[in-house]
Image 1 (cartoon, helix red, strand yellow):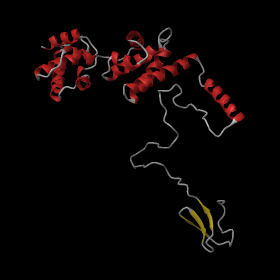
Image 2: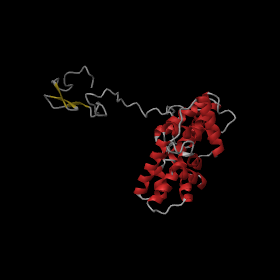
Image 3: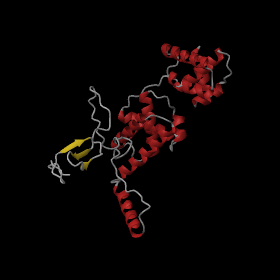
Image 4: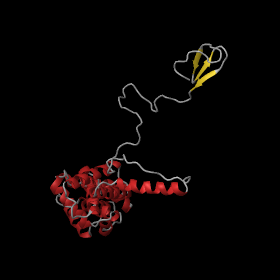
Length: 285
């Protein structure tokens, strides 16, 4: 119905608007109907100034194009020449999505970062920050001649270090496509050239996860946390690996509570050697 229409087209009677229908008051003819809800798709409150307009999926730094790419989908209804035509269009479209070798490397590295982060059950924040860090390293030409997999793994490790997330090199290497040497070389390059604000991770961050892996009682975990806090305050473990200190605290707490836990078991959970645990244990006394 045109917006200019003000009378019934049948009897020229007056029109009334009732909910989603426009009805003639004389003959009852339904002149127009509109069942679309044109209101907002969200709840809004008086103190909420956020623009909640729906404009598609949010942008993400974990993709080279921020998630703004398009795809030509598949359809089972296409047959013969039409299907071949769309296959050619899809192939050309995929080729046009990558403008340079640097962008192709970024796609591969971002995919690796998403895979590793998902395997380690880390947050989206770690994933996005790792992709941003890799982008910065690529902009500074740090990746030339080096392993893409190593820089992807090193970016994740660096983000964990800067955010205080307790993840060790062996844990990341276990699911990454890079070895420990590639990760350390890439991390050293980023730390040197980009000036990462990294610092030692508190040993207490490792204790809950190691305690779960070793299946120790809750009392042992609490005592290990107390020992790690005391060691941090006195500086008794300065210069030692935080994961080794956490394993030593668990071993010492197990001894205090007469729970059977060997140095080798604690070392295996922390990814260090029994000698590292033993030396850290002596420093706790």
